[in-house]
Length: 495
Image (cartoon, rainbow, N blue to C red):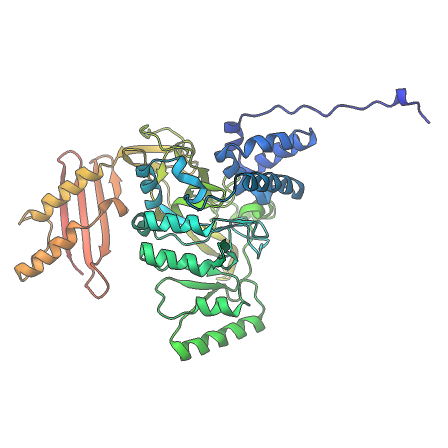
């Protein structure tokens, strides 16, 4: 046996510490590697204690928590829980106490562009191939009182983006205590309907809760209500189809199923590298898509993020750029800048941005991945504190072009064009009809539509259909705004 003097212990290796800003820029695989180095050196807990004091870094690590090892997850969650218990729940606040970080005008801008609200952190289902890397187990939630405050105060703004109330989560998991009352997802859904005037779309994998299924198939709903049937056995599918048929007979309810006879698609999020390593050579060069379908703002129990849909890559394995919002600055957006950097100091315009379709093989059989169908350069609208910018980006997120979009100037040009007897309005059969159409046209918000921009002619162009309200004829809108002449041309007519 060796003497104690002969036993030598090597001190843990010191890991070169990165700044919080440097850590926040790491893609998830590099973030995990860095945290593992800190853990090996015995420095992880100190780092995480510091990280949770930095709201942006806390949000970034939280978003990729499924990528962490179980021991790292446990340490991170324990530290967050301890901090939450120490500070308690602020029932008079907005979610994340956003009122302490942003002004009233900034909050209006943020909530006008929120496209998704994740009510819980974690998901009871924990699907292994989840496209959003939902961590298994609902661990935290946004308190109902804070959601109520948000919808009551900013309902008009939230109505613009009509956010769905889930992301990396299962809607039916939501549970919040308010005094003696137990609040559920249905209560939050009602807040959206009452204060923001819309019926949020729902996608759920809760196929066994009868009360939940009854709510999902409730008649009178206008939002999409879908049950995910990915990977469900034939017997389970048949039972749900029979239940839907009975509901349609008894109360006219309608419930959409999707994913029948399909398996979860690998290759999104945590499984992206696995798919890439085993991929057939014939499909390697085909850009892959995730399941994200929005550009804009995401609110979760742990962070406020800007998000933009892009193809899946090592840097963006979910097919979306996800960046915590740190502030809203007045800095102009410049060509040559990284969109990722700009997203930290601005608000991305909320827009539907679906760009994926299941790949179909040459033999007409379904492939095992979603093909990215979007085009580059891609248009992204960026809001600063006092301006809006039209930008076009390449696949790496570099801003190729940035042009200020002067909403007030364009709206003024639209008003002039509407009032011009020889302007953009289609001739009508009566003065009353013309007055009605002009009143409708005056309320068109071109800033919420998707224009294209031609840098050679310095012209924004719009082409879309709209209508005043259900039951009215659709209006065909074809307009162009010339920046040089400050004038709008084109046509608005019935279709």
